[in-house]
Amino acid sequence: MQVTLIFFIVLGFYLFSMSWTQQQMVGGFSGAFRNVFQVVEKFFPPNTAVISAIWGPMVETIQMAIIATTIAAILTVPLALLAAQNVTTFKPLYYVTRTFLNILRTIPDLVLAVIFVGLFGIGLFPGILALIIFSLGILAKLISETIESVDMNPLEAMRASGGNVFQVIWYALIPQVLPQYTSLVLYVFEINIRASVVLGLVGAGGIGLILNQQLGFYNYPNAMMIIILIFVVVIVIEYISTKIREALL
Amino acid sequence: MKHYSLPPKPKNSVFKKVRIIGITILVIAMYVWTFASIDIEWGRAIERAANNFSRVIPRLFSPDWSATGDVAMSMLETVLIAFAGSLMAAVIAVPLAFLAARNMMGGVIASTIGKWILSAVRAFPDIILAILFVVAVGPNAFAGVLAIAIGSTGMLGKMFSEIIESIDMNVVEAMEASGANKLQILFYGVLPQITPEFISYAIYRFEVDIRASSILGIVGAGGIGTMIIFASSNRNWNEMGTILLAIIIVVTIIDFVSAKIRRKIV
Image (cartoon, rainbow over all chains, first blue to last red; front, side, top):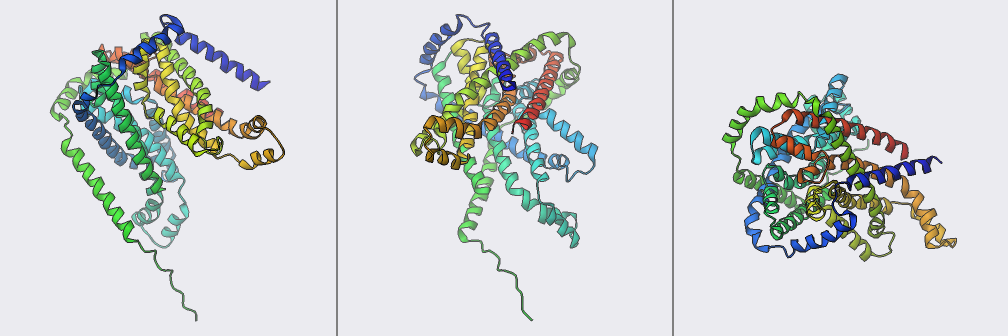
């Protein structure tokens, strides 16, 4: 009974969503899908000649992600410690950090990029800044959870046998956290690669800018080539990163 | 008296040492390459920031309440896009997940093909898919629904297939042994094991999709992103403040509710 009710509510909301989102569509469902095939044709064949021209911005995109991930990985350490319940025993500080991180995570990366472009003008810098803030939210949360799940016994044992604070952290905490930390940083790097390829759409540097221009000129074969290049780069980097992460854990 | 000694330290093999050194060199090379060739125009960025700071930051924190109605409508559209898209994805992902799960189709080839399809779909960022669909079906919310649906299918399919691979196969074997046909095994042996986790992941994906659909409007695919791009090109940072507030509130509420529901299900 309850399940049926939930099912009908979900279905009803779904139908409502579908009709709402199709409101402004011209020509209805069938018209749109006839259009799809005509448009898809325009995208093919992709123009392979642009590869040499778009390689530079693509490399720039990857470098944005590398820099942003590195800086976020450094900045995340104090934040993650503050957001871990077993390290930060002062409750108000813990809650403030948690809330701050939760709010940070709700803001989409592109919105951050739009704001930073407004602040710093177009270019790589606002893009990198947006990526740093965006990945900080995710990374600090994941790492603080890792810190919370460490085995506290080695720490206590070291303290009992006379280790000072730094020795305890260096020999008991870091070895437990390091593999997960590296793995999570790589995971966020993957996310950043995907995010950085689109930042250019709002003027924050990288390959997205070129993609936006080509679409603006209705130059679909060039746009398709850029999309294929993005696809290949994302797949290759994800593959490498997954392999490294598997080796770590 | 017996003499105790510590067990010998595990020796680091030469191979391991070489690998560590190799990785270190690669990482250093990567950083040198990155920082040597990246070109950030510091002077311009700092100058612009000095000029713009007072025009942007204080206004972001003083939201324009007169836009609340429009923002609320756009936010509703965003939620509807996310809901329609993720539900569609949750349905499409199920057959693909069965195809990709190694213990279901009974062949490595089928599961490899399934996994390849899923990871190929996953590689496209949502917004790139939205660009394609905007060109295909026009600049409207339905393009956003399609982008979310396809984007989520890749991720959900992967999660679902991992769930299917981790089920208890003894139940299936027992049913096979007692003469159940394929359909009966599916309905009584497999589905009860996977349904709660499927639903939990689908709800989680809805959370993610709310965030994703709030930016699709930047490329014309409906939702609040359309307002974001207008507010930024009009330098209307007060309105941007309202939009940001709306996103933060709606995402927080949906995260909270969905976390509650998921904890109840699993």
